Length: 251
Image (cartoon, rainbow, N blue to C red; front, side, top):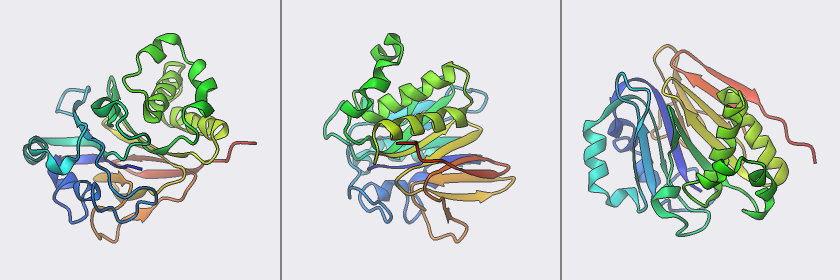
């Protein structure tokens, strides 16, 4: 269910990360190597990136497959950024909400993506949704599990959580309400990357002091890629990467 990638480091053309590598995110839309659920990610795609001096990211999303979008190919060739988040989508429910359901989701300086599925959606998490402020529910741009997860993260941030605590708390709450959910969340503010590994694959390539790439699967065969263990919180910056085990919620 989906493939996603986030990067922080020296400025690079978007295509250097998303299209040019031999097993790039674009190729993963039709030929992923490590995807455990689903086979083709053709239900939409998106990329968000940061321009120099502007903390609010730009974003380009479409409802169809990335391989057929010539505008994206041009965009990826010429746009450069020090940070980005991109995703290709295999929808939990086919046809739901189109472009509005394609990651990355955004709020202020943040970009967000979800790889996985909420088990029993939407009934299992109805109580979590009902606990959100009505304005948050009315502001949902899509009626999919990923959009609700993003609303839950934002609600925790509004209550004062830092990024790592907000994504961790959301994962544990949803895992308790909907066991067997796959909850790989990916979030960046343009300087750091926060990710969870919960039921699907995640890899990291880091060059301390230079760059960090976090992705559902490697885009090449560089031996510096390392798999991140399941049930883990990852926080990465250009300086370093930290991993923290996540505990299973109590039954």
